[in-house]
Length: 78
Image (cartoon, rainbow, N blue to C red; front, side):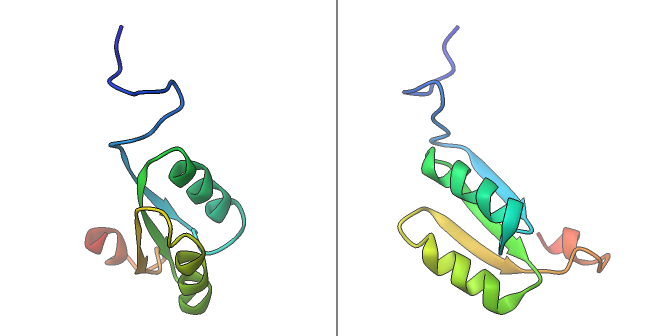
């Protein structure tokens, strides 16, 4: 069965939304997804840390979005 991927672990052509992406586990997940070719939207409520993380991942296909998921409107904006 063909998945359309060039490599079994490739995520090329896939899009991921990573919450808590500014540090810790979320940042690690974002790095793993991006390094396998995914495009990612990095979401966090910590503006400075998110900017630093986004800058560190500049070589990859990603965008960042400032959002606090404790706010009920944030998921709708994402």
